[in-house]
Length: 109
Image (cartoon, rainbow, N blue to C red):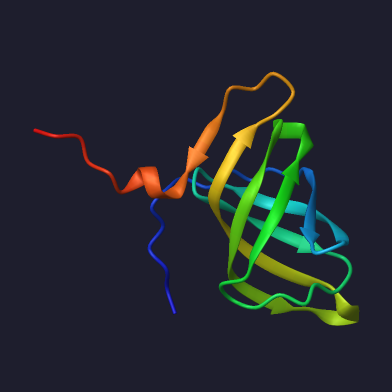
């Protein structure tokens, strides 16, 4: 299955954290784009397509909500997960704000 990319992906390896209930799972991004990112988790994450999680990306001064788009389990309980940003905001002085619903609103002509 080929997925047509809408945005350029940047190979960027940074640490992040998924918050699932009271559990925090550390991950490293493999790549990141304007719409989402590919994460590698060294420990298992019980996520399915469509699950919504809280994400922290401290090196980018961002945190917020993302949705699971795909997941592949690897050897030794590790996994690769694709996420789509839903509502992210800047922290620590960053003015960044991304809201998925704003992408689909067109300005009046």
